[in-house]
Image 1 (tube, rainbow, N blue to C red):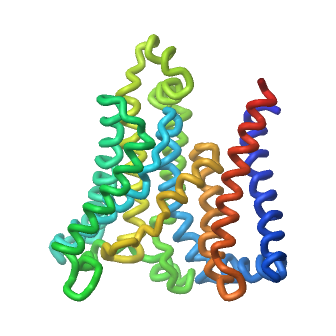
Image 2: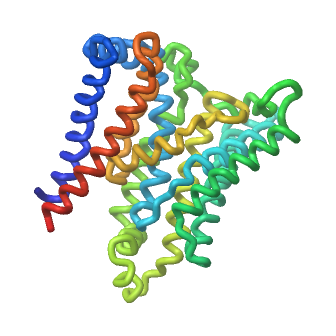
Length: 342
């Protein structure tokens, strides 16, 4: 089996196997799995509102998946997307709340998006600096930075920026809100799907071009595949480490902008909901390929909202189990494939 075939076959087999296992779990729970999945499809892709909810979640998951995927090409495991999301969302909220109300919408949205991407990038680069300068393992660094980001944003929110008697910041100005798709097209039944949904596939395509159609991307992949050979070839591995982490963090910040400017319009504790960690699963299922990430994000977006639509029949935790089983199978099948090649 060649590498391209394996890249397609392993995720497909993993998803199918996970669905079979989940059906068995549903049967053990005393429910009809066919009925459950029918209800899930009706509640998601079978309704305008459900489709919009899936699209909204998919948008964020694409961007967070890319935040994990690009560093992965340089053999960096960015576990810090959750912290990068939090810092990006908080920066966008602060920027959007302080802008003058008369500012044009394009300028207001752009400034908030730049603030979110900048905060996410800086937080990710910090882990890169610890890796390059001090040799700190990026997994440990990004995990610790997640906790630090949560602590910083929680402290600033609680003691300085929360609206009295609430747990959220002042809402951003109206001009900084990303328009919903429903408000412009009339579709998606007032769901949180917004125009970021049109941007995220473009970002995925841009990442693909950078990685596979540019000299910069070639050097980045070479650094990940053969770091010693890349070093002897004059490639600056440290620079590519910082760049990959920075671009990844910026993508996470863009995902935060989708949540904050397109849905919440203010920052509140827990608003990211752990979606940064789901982004890791998205990247793993897609093999860290920017284009496959779009399909992987759609799959996880369906599971994320689908679990809520059938929560009256079975615990939504079962759909979290499907996510976990899928990733375990991806890792297992990948390891088996490598062993067979050896």
